[in-house]
Length: 118
Image (cartoon, rainbow, N blue to C red; front, side, top):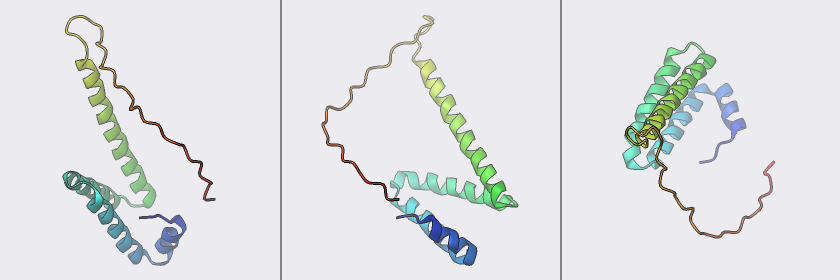
């Protein structure tokens, strides 16, 4: 699925009902393409986003609410990472164990230059 900002922007201004129909269709398409084990979680996240949009009195207010959700999720992930780092510490030693080294795959590839689309 490609995204054309100008088309979507014009549609939102000129035909909000069609914009909303297509927005929901695009969201459903993305969720349907996700692995089946992730779809329920994605639907739950989309529900939360939709509820924040409904609770907001403006588009900017919705953006602020959704941004806050994103940062709360980021903070949760950061705390989980810090917890994992703490588990790597040896009990009572006060120093962290080294995580096992992960070797980069030994694959060669040619890098192709692409021209800008603009």
